[in-house]
Length: 249
Image (cartoon, rainbow, N blue to C red; front, side, top):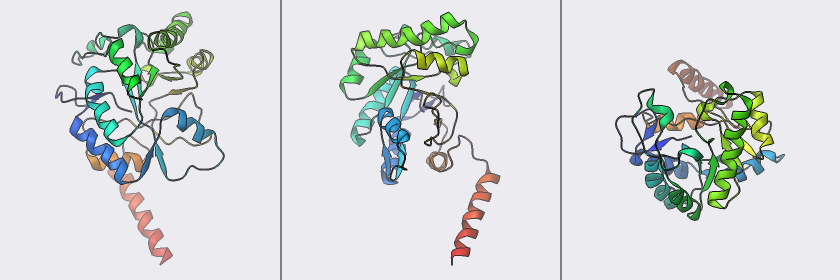
């Protein structure tokens, strides 16, 4: 899970530089990860056998303009699919939901840019209409945020919208069911971890990639399926690996 791909130094938590993003994509290639779209991921998860090799999907929340400008060319160079989750009522506007918390103002893509994203072969999903905290709003408002954003994107872009991402990662069973009832095929959370065959498709796990992550941190996230891996757990992991190799010999 990414948010922004850009050069801004004001938002290092959510913004990965284009240079680091390119290194991370090269890491996936060099370490033989199979990068798939969310539709393919769902098919693999629905199967009974473990898919061959290491599989991952790439997603972007919010639809920042700099993300589109920087990420799409790099993804095309590696021939990697990706899904961009957009906020339908704020298209062409700014990240209003972040500004009260002190984050810098950032432009969001407009509909013409979203059409370009689709034309270039990438997927677009819904991130609601206005980016609210869904469990904290009335059900009728939540239904409009979830359902109407899907219909709006489908109407404006002429594509089916099968995937949803919960704003702030916040959802409960009621919200989860509303997303399913609105016709989506799956939804992405912000809970870290790996997705196995038993995962709820409306609570897909994702790894949050920070702008402060070194390439070694990126690799550890993919290895452990966690956003944070403290030194104690890392040391225990390598001790277990060393013991296992010693036992085999």
